[in-house]
Amino acid sequence: MGSAKYTELGAFLRSRRARIRPADVGLPTGPRRRVPGLRRDEVAQLAGASVDYYNELERGAGSQPSEQMIAALARALRLTADERDYLYRLADRPVPAQGGAASHVHPGMLDLLDRMKSTPAQVITDLHITLVQNPLAVALLGDQSGFRGPRASFVYRWFTDPDARKLYPEADHEGHSRAFVADLRAAAARRDAKDAEAGSLIAALLDLSSEFTALWADHDVAFRRDDRKRIDHPVLGLIEVNCLNLFSEDGRQRLLWFTPAVGTDSADLLDLLAVVGTQDLVEPTR
Image (cartoon, rainbow, N blue to C red; front, side, top):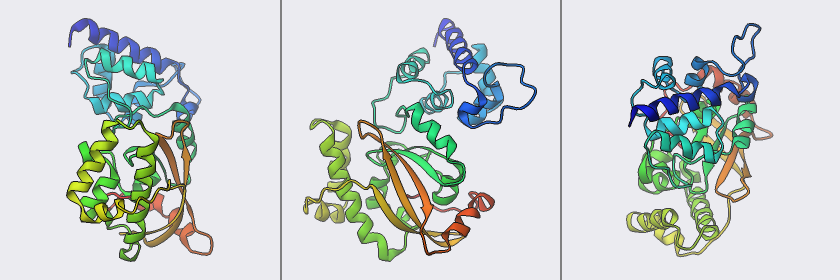
């Protein structure tokens, strides 16, 4: 990566940081702010980077950022799709196809996610790839940010990795399997018939999972919109929640949030999530 692009990358990051108010990204304003937008340490915090590393990027002296870091910076700075693509090109990284783990999250969805501080919430793709989670979602479901390749899709992990099912009671597994397959068929149909991402996911599951193959042959079609789920949390025990969905206009992304099921003690258990945090969590699931 040339020095000119390093310099332009730093200048672009500074310009985007200056236009964002702390309240826009869920941060307190504070009485003594010397900059109009976010501070460098705040951007680093939002992107999951060290302050020193982010400072180097803005100075144009840092190493070439990874694709995962670029995606995190784009979300932290609320970049538009065009701005995000520009950032990838400045970093000499290929612009990722829409739908993968580095997909651009619409700023409006991020704004809603930031305002959901008292309930677990996350944004996923139509192929069940988690793009971003709030802290309570991590506490409830585990951190889902580290998966790459086919394993980025929770549907893939559900049918290929027994550990992916640990947070659901075994009695509920069959129902979830059917719902995932019906949802995947609906999502694939909504995409272009030649969509390689959905096609490769389905082909892999047909090859690897006899359970998936049998359910796929039933031709059930139904988007998962509103579910009532039981989650067997490793610390808090059984939590019964309503899982609600807000779909993007093109259906490629969904904002999920979890509320306590009426008539259960789940409200009190969800209140404890902030205290429990992410300690002792097993394989992430949803």
